[in-house]
Structures are given as structure tokens and as C-alpha cells.
Length: 359
Image 1 (cartoon, rainbow, N blue to C red):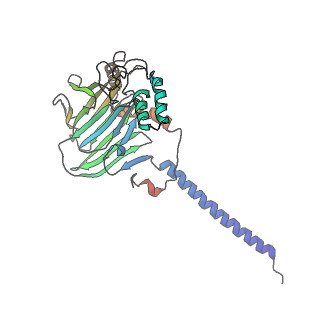
Image 2 (image 1 turned 120 degrees about the horizontal axis):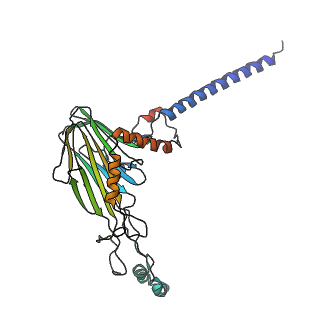
Image 3 (image 1 turned 30 degrees about the horizontal axis):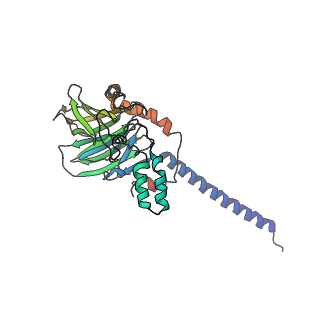
């Protein structure tokens, strides 16, 4: 009896269809899982220890005001910057006498006197040094009244919300710190809270490497830091001057930052006039605003600049009209439409979702 080849072909075809269906089903399940991962996986950086140096700190910013938060539990550090604080003053940066030394430099090079040619070029033919971006200063939050070991520590930066968070347990109390920089209200907002009333004891201070003064306005309860940034030396009046930055009266960018504390429960303490403290508070919200006298590339920021005090006070008064939750909501309404325009999926798996950022 001859074999029925049509039956074999039918069986093979049915087997192929079955395998294809199974393969497509597995692919569909894989796509569904990846889709869920894309939706559910939080876009966040998180760590089990505070930052030890600047490169480990987490950045916050709104395009003008910036901060690096370290997530420390004894003395938290926010390193601050403002985008117009540079070593700046208007000047003509052309070196009009450079051509006078060109022939001599060429002769020295032709004669093999390279070192002599280099000295001539460096001394007489170069323009002034480029300007340098300057730090605004440091905001330090010193926590007191507890010295026990820290447990269950975690710090994170949630890219989906541009909000940083630090959480840990100390002496049975869970402490939480949230922070963000709002483009809508132009302030750094920091919220300290605990799950036991009266547990927040914190002292805030402002420091800067520049010539500045810090004082506490007791009436407003505002800590103010004001100062002036450095400039480059004038080459025309001092051609042999070092290229290092210097401080001059009526020159350089003037700056000011103001820190307001909103204390819930507990009491406010004024210390030595250089610090702002909250004692046995339930929660504390800090608002920091900053501005400079920069008024354009062609205006001397020392004598023709804006008044940073007016700008800062206006910003801080406006932001203080809202509580922390309202400020955060305004921040998210501004941030999310921009952030949500683009999504990136790097092939993360469920296993890596719960792995801390640094391994």
C-alpha cells in the first residue's frame, strides 16, 4: 500500500502552525511583561548610604537655581549655585599689542629657541583668562537631640517627579526629608518630617567661599546671605598680575540668598544671629530663594546691576503664600508635561527594578 503523502504534509503543517502559535504566544507574553515594566518601573536613582563627595550627591535644579543634596543624617548638605554667578565684569578682551611680538616669536621658533618663544607668546600675545562659574554657597542642616545608630537608610532621586528623598530610622523614629527646586515658584523647597510628633530638631546655616555676610532677620524669621563674587585682574593697569581671581569693591556680581523656615509644632530659635533653628517640631519646611545683580553682558554688575535683595524677597514672599504640598503640586504641574514628552526604555527587568543604583 502506498503511503498517503498528503496526510504527512498535513501533519507537518499542523505541527508547524502549533509551534508558530506557541512562539507568537510566548512573544506576546514577553511584550506584555515588557510593557508592564515600562509602565511600572520607577525612574529613580537610589542608594543605601549618604554621598561621601560631590560626584555622589543628587542634583536638583530648574535651569537657573541648582543644588546637590548629599543625604546626610547628622549634618545634611545642599551645595547651591545660581546660573548668573560668574567671575564677571564687562571688558574688552582683545589683546591689541599681540601683533607687536609676532615677528620676535617667529624668529625664536625659526632659531630653535622654543622656550623663549613660548614665554613671549604667553606673556604678551594671549588674551585674558576665561571667566569661571562660581558656587553660590552651602546650606547646612544640622540635626540634634539624637545620636543613636541609623537604620533602614535610603536616599533617592525620582526622575519622574524631580524630587529627592531621604528616609531612615533613628532611635525608633522614622525621619523623612523631601526636596525639589521649583521652576514655577523659583525656590528650593525642603520638607523635614517624622512619624513621632516633636522629633524634628534642626539648625540651618548658610556659608559661601566669597566675601559675604550672613544675618538673621528676627522679625521675618529669615536667614540672609549677601556677598560679591570675584573678578579677573585688569591687565592694562597690572600686566604682570596673576591670573587668579580677585575681589574688588564695586566690581563683580553681587548675590543674595534668603532662607525661610516654616515650623509646625515646636518653636523657632534664633541662636547667635547666624543660624535658624527649630526645636521639637513636628515638621519643618525650608524655602530658599537666590538672585544676583547680573544685568546683561555689557553692564557692570557692581555699579549697573539689578538689586538681588528686591528680587529674592519678592520671590520668597510669593512662594510663602503656598504650603509645601501646594508648592509640590505646582512644581509637578510644571515639570510633568515637559518630562512626559519622551520616554526611554533600557530593557530593565523586574529583577533590576529593586536593585540599588550603585550595585
